[in-house]
Length: 159
Image (tube, rainbow, N blue to C red):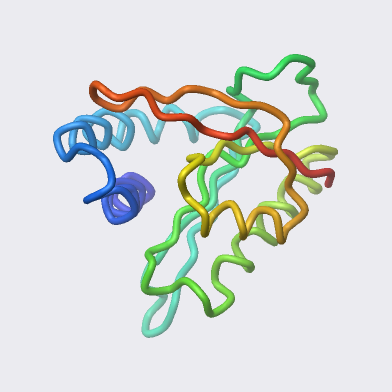
């Protein structure tokens, strides 16, 4: 389920903004069943699926993992919000905030003290959402998609 939601929400978010062939290649690599199973097999990885009625239809998911970010000074007290994906049709009605609350609660339940994430620097809606939730920029990274190198911000907030 996470592979399907991940690929679909990634395509929805970036189609028309990034190269189509690069989007397809990224989804074919990053959202395979094997890639998802590999992430989920790690002890510290936690995932939650967001659903709506009728019949608990999946509309997004949250994924917490050990940090995989180019940031100095990472410790065992850090955890990464690797993915928080929600179909845009379900934005603006509290679903995203419920998902963020789930991520924060999940990080807290693991005894973590800092939540990290990477976000595309040209995604103002996401940046505003993260700022509203207490995240501040602590670094940057490059993200190659196809022939273009994009820039992400690395954000953090205390738990």
